[in-house]
Length: 484
Image 1: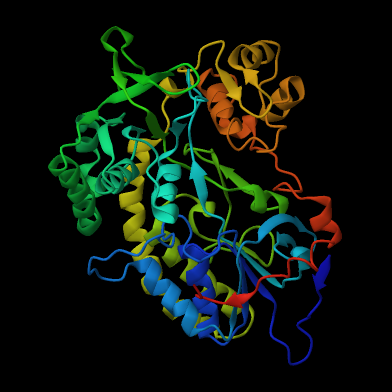
Image 2 (image 1 turned 90 degrees about the vertical axis):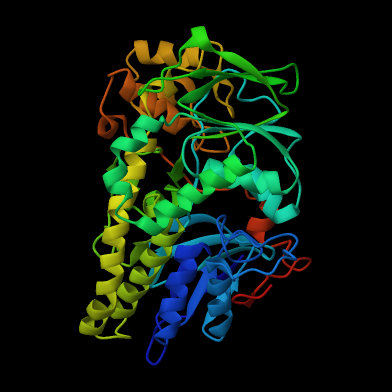
C-alpha cells in the first residue's frame, strides 16, 4: 500500500482530487487547470469520457464533427501538465479528512486531498419483474457499452423497453450495427407528452434533438409502442420472448390486452439512479426526491456538499444529462478555485452567471422530462411472489412482503430482517426498487424509508491489492490527461 503524503504547505498547491472522468469530472478538472491549479482525476475506465462519451472501439470512417466528448478530451490533453489522470482505478472508500482509498493496477493507495470533487455518474434503474434475471435481459446502457467499447451486438432480435429518450438513442445505435430492433415499448403515452409541452418548449434545440431521434426511429422502420410496458420475460435458461401490455398513466398494465414478442435480447431501463456511495461515505447530507434512486446530495450554489471541501457535480448529484453535467462541473471548478484563492470571488461570480442562467433554462426542460419519466406505482406491482428481487442474496418478493407485514418498513429494518442489500452490489440493484415499493404501499414516506447504506470497500478488493504484493508485477498506471 502506498500513500500520497504531499501537502499544501508553503509554496505548494492545494491537493485537488476529482473522482470520475465523465463530462462533469472532465469539465471541473479543465476549469481548475485553466486557473493554474493541479488536479488528479481518478476513473475506473481506461480512457476519459464516462458512459455518455465512451471512447469508441472502432473509430467511425464517416466524416463527422467532433462531439462534446472528443472536445473535452482534447482540452484535457491541452492541460496535461496540470492534470494527472489515473485510469482503471476504483475508489474503495473515503476516510476522514477527505482521504481517498483507491485500487488500481499498482494495488491499493491513499490519496490525500484538500478538495474532493465527486462526479461518479449514475446507473440504470430496473425494478424486478418476472424473468428479469434470464440471460439476454440487460439494460440499454449495457447494450450501448457493448456497441461503443467492443463493437459487439448484444443480440439478433432486440426489444428496448422502459421510458425516456435514451431508448431511442440505443435503438438507433443497434440499428446502425445491423441488429434487428423489433420495437421500442415506452411507458410514456403521447397525451402525457402533450401536457408537458410548455416545459419542453423552453429549449427548442433539445426538443428538436429528441424529435430527430423519433424521426430516425420511424425512418429505420422500428415500431414505437407508446403507452406499453413489459410485464414479464420468458424462456428456459435463455430469453425467448417478452410479454408487453398497454398501461395507464400509473403504468399499471392491462393484462387482458397483453401479447408476446419473440426476441433473444431485452434492453430495459426506467431512468437512472445517482451513484450515492461516495457522498454517503464522505458524510454528506442527502435529500429525498421522487426520482429513481430517491436521494441526491444537498449542495450549495457552487456544488459544495454539507461537508466542507467535498463537492459534487453531474449525474451523481442528480441525473440531468451530459450538458447539465458539463456546466455543473464548470461551476464546481469555479467554486473550488475561488476557495483555494486562485481567483477572486468577484471573478468567480462573473464567470458563474452565464453558467447559472443556462442551467436555469435547462432545469425547466429537465423538470418536464422528470415529470414524464418519474417512476409510477405500476412498476412496484410487476414482481410476483416468486420473483427474485435481490439477486445477490436471492431474496424473493414474498420474503420482502412478509418482512414488511411484520413491521420492517425502512430499508435498514428490511436489511436486518431479510439480508436485502447485503451482497456484493450493496443494494444498488434491489434497494431503490424496494424503497419505492414501501412508498407505493403507503408504509412510509421516502424520507422515513431512508437511503441505501454503503460501506467500505465499495468494490471487491483482493488481499494482494491491499497489501501491495501485486505492485511489483503490475506497476501503478499514470498517464497524461486525455491520452489514448
